[in-house]
Image 1 (cartoon, rainbow, N blue to C red):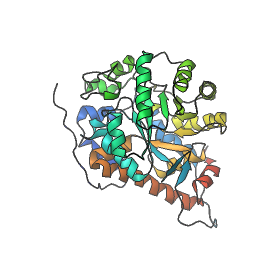
Image 2 (spheres, one colour):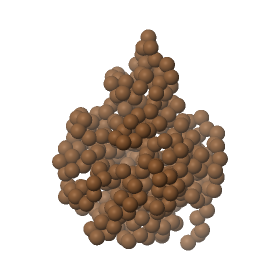
Image 3 (cartoon, rainbow, N blue to C red):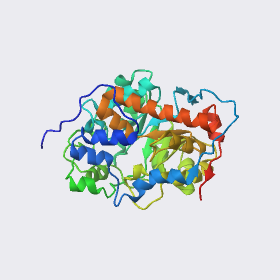
Image 4 (cartoon, one colour):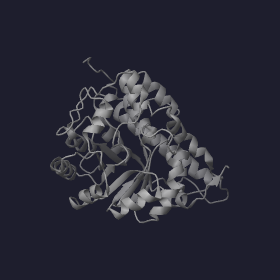
Length: 364
C-alpha cells in the first residue's frame, strides 16, 4: 500500500467562509482521503439539499429589541458551552492531519464545546481524552459489534475515558453509494484502534468497515446499551416521528436528527426538513441534536429555532484540521459562533433561549 502522507500544519488559517475551507483542504488532503471526507451518496441530491433546505425558512429581522452583544453561550446538562455548536462524529480524522482526533479534540476543547469521538477514529479514546484535557466535554459515537462481549468492552472504555454520552449511529448499517470512493479505489490507510477487536480498518473499503459492525439494529440494542451503562444514550439518524418515539421508548435519552451528511440514502429528505417533525414528536422529553448541512451561522440559528438543542458540524471542522491543526479547528468553531452572534443581533435575539423561541417564516 502506498504511504499515506497528509497535513502536519499547526497554524492560523485565512478564510472567509466554509467554501474557502473546502477548496483549501482539497489541496492538502490526499485525493482518496479528501474524496471520502467531502463526498456524498449517489447523485448527491440529498447532500446538496442539506444546505438548500435552509432557504425554505427565513429569519425576519427584529428591530427595537434592546439587544447588544448577543450571548451565544449555553448551559447544557452539566456543561457550560461557548455556543450550542458541537463536533459531530467523523471517522478517521487522521485522513486530514497526522495528529488526527488528538488535534481535533484539542481545538474543540479550547473553544469550549463537546467533541464526539467516532468508533472509527484513527486514535484511541485514551489519546483523545488526554488531548482534550481531563475536564473536556466528550461524547462517544458507537458502531456496535455483532459480539456483545466486544460491545461491553467498548462501553467500558468509553466510561473509563469520561464520555458523557453514547451516541448510537443507527442510519449506517452499510455504506451508502459513495461514487467518489469507487472512482478513487479508496480503502482506509489507517487503523481503527477503538474497534480493533472487530475491524482493523487498514485496507478496507467503507462498505466493508460498516458490514463488520452490527447491521440488524433494533430497539433491543438501545435497551442493551442503556442497561449496561449510566451514560445517556442518544440515537443518531432519526428523521421521523415514528423513529423518535421508538428510540425514546427503548430508553434513549437523546435524539440526533441527521441524514449522515447526505452520505447514506440519496433521495431522502434534507435533514433540516425532518427537524421540526422530530422535535415536535420529542416534545421536550429529551435533548435534540441536529447535523447535516450546517455551513453558516444562519443555518445554526434556523436549526435552533426549529427545535434543536445543539447543532453539530463535521466537514468544516475537518477542513480546518487539515489546514491549521488544532488552531484551525478552534478557528472554524469561532467562525460559526461569530456568524451566529451576528445573526442573533440582527434578528433581535439576546440569548440562545431567545433564538429557540424565535419563529421563522416560510418562503413558500
